[in-house]
Length: 248
Ligand SMILES: Nc1ncnc2c1ncn2[C@@H]1O[C@H](COP(=O)(O)OP(=O)(O)OP(=O)(O)O)[C@@H](O)[C@H]1O
Ligand SMILES: [Mg+2]
Image (cartoon, rainbow, N blue to C red):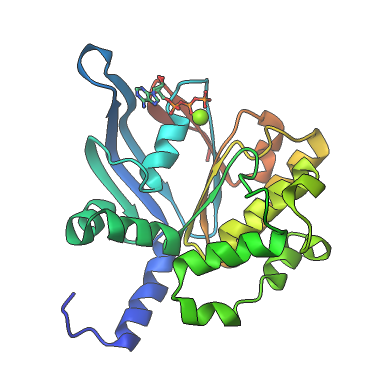
């Protein structure tokens, strides 16, 4: 790409890359140093298309969270390539450093964690406003309306509630809404149902799958919960840092 790229071609490229999902090629991640080195990921290949939710199961310590860290630009692989929406993360880092990588993460990636990871003092609406503000210039935040995002996860009526006033499932739904405010192309989800009962777990994963389908998001969800797997489009298993298909 040249420096003379116009605004419209930048937009075209952005639209194009949204359909390129997540692509990991021969990714190895070694953690620790010296004799304590652990190979958390061992030549992993993974392709997640826009509009699908892929589940990753596997025993504790298998490398599932490491995979999300690498896909989410939170850890650099020891070897191999990670492409998010057609962009090579190593190139983003070498072109613009950690700042560019952090910006890329805020603008294109959504994260959902086990407990929702909400900020205790903020209302549901303010959790979303903050996420939006972190990814945009100050001047534009006045136009942001969190309501449609909260409504899309069935939380429109709890916009003014703080996390302490919500149930575990409700907190998780606010966390999902927050992950979606910046229209991410890739959604990375780690154990979203660990704190929930069976019915709420099903509801949350159906909601995640629906959002991936409707918004053309490439979704990856790590889980220990086999009951929610039917809600996912594909299932892969991670064992000792290696990924194999369970259901295509
Ligand atoms: N910072 C680190 N330094 C050294 N080793 C690490 C580090 N973080 C994780 N590991 C090791 O890497 C391997 C993979 O860890 P990871 O957290 O990806 O597993 P996981 O599949 O997510 O497990 P769980 O289901 O328990 O969350 C484990 O052996 C773990 O001990
Ligand atoms: Mg983990």
